[in-house]
Image (cartoon, rainbow, N blue to C red):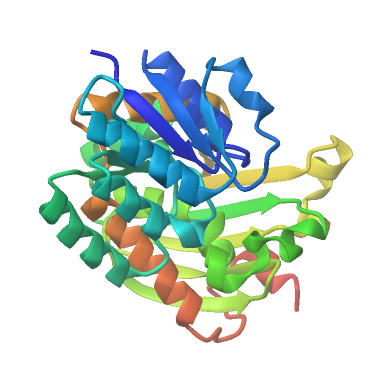
Length: 317
């Protein structure tokens, strides 16, 4: 039976992937909300979607549908709103009798997860998140290989992720630490979750540099040592990227070997949705380790550049 979805943050950057996933899993979108009214993208995916620019009116509409107790009730609410609203919107979903599918980061603080677990128990509904790198075919194969070739030595891993952003970024909610959680939370959490999924738990965490536009550090995991560097400063792009006109550079190496996983990103949300609807979604506990880590990164004072720092950080000095 097809499920009814509603969505928050439909005018935002990530919403199209959720709209695509809802459509491609054969479900219905019946309501959407965003304070910005540039929501014409809805017409490319669904017809006759009720749209609200005020959350209070959206809330009232969803509650009305719930009280009708018929086929019009909302079963899932997809949450694509700014990071600092995820916690509240997850609570809203459960309280109107729907499950939630929430973008990363699920919440900003580890203790928010504890509170959401209590509400899950009270309402009998679930909260799921999008950990899409865990379903990427290349990375699934890498995990399989790592499991088969356990040698007892720690792998050397290096993450370099530079995605150019203009001055608007720091003016928007994404540039405000209390709303986005900072770079490690907003753009790095995908990778931190991936590393813990591949290489197990965190043993130590060093922050070597942190600013509004770039940060980096060193992670000691059970099965890997990770140098990481994140940046939204286009001047950090390697020469080969700028010469080819690229505004984003992403590289992950394991023991010096590049892991190529550039393709297929637009379909990963659909895979996660399909798995979630089949009962195999990523719940609160799946999200907890990465939330704990990025919170730790956010509150830790940088120690300065060390020999363990990412080469891009060492080249800054």
